[in-house]
Length: 447
Ligand code: GLN
Image (tube, rainbow, N blue to C red; front, top):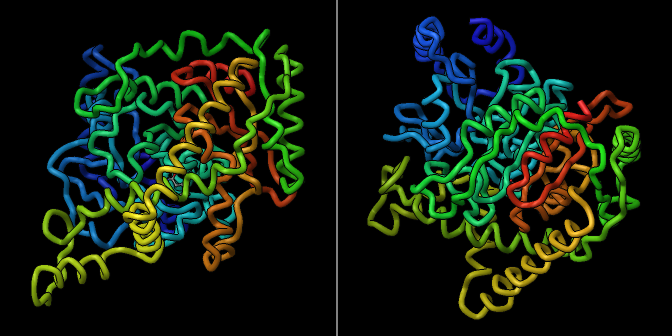
């Protein structure tokens, strides 16, 4: 009830929620109370949670913040959702986001911009902007988001909360609306590292319904959480500490590095030489996969159908023209172009090769250190409207997060200070594949 009241009090200003499930939530809470009273509680029993509106939720509207899915009610739960429900977590609602998870500011939503609770004139980041803002505004203690190029970590940093992008394959993508399938990954956002660990524990692990989920043991994330950082080697990739970095971000990072040194970690410099190519590589691969994934929205199988179509092609065209927003159309066109015959080898195939080099950089770096520490975003949250006319400028927001998705490994964003204007700043810890436990432990030591 306290969280529902908080949502009612602040969401008019924050706009984090697309759908609220108050009645279901209260019924779920009563069920959880019974389970608690029976002494049969799981770690998340009765914990109120909310989900980015990209997760299929049985019987609950799932829009992906797009007009084309404005009426779509899934007949099943995503695996991650089913795993939360199996513990009797209580679902409070579905959260705003950039349409189809394409964006860095939550300004590409058919349901209006989300506002950063720290300063309502600034963006919360994106695409999981609703997920980060809802935690920051204390509307909900924790949420799930998705991260294709930074969409958990960048909004977490801008809203002063903790966000974890697990290793590709760690969490099932079954029932999660696909953006770029070789990059998408599900992960938690919460007020602190331990809560992220609890959520990851609940959703991680092999799922026969997702052929890219990996059948490798899930460790106990609580077990080593308090083991500290003594003896760990933290690598600073030289390509991430560039001259253009915002002065406040640089200072916050320098202070965080000093804290780790004080806690007994060894700081080493490393190099990820192909970093410069990551953004271009991502903006070929992600739109290419998106253009293919979004072909399913044809007005027949899902969502909204144009009313006055003359024939089948006209119906597809009109449904898609009216249903998709401008950024989604831009990505579909870019991706279709990059995949067309004649261009495939020059663009898509080349990008895949560059991706392999970027991945190799990480393996080389992890031979010299246990994890990496970098900025999350080049600046703190920017003003609403500041970058909407300049897509390339907007794409640069993810320059420090995208390489990890291309490499397929895990990254944790956690707060490490404030700008002079009072906006949160985050640092990113990047780990070896499937070594989320080390990130959580190192993040917890800082907290
Ligand atoms: N901002 C990046 C994009 O628009 C990343 C989005 C994401 O991680 N879903 O593609």
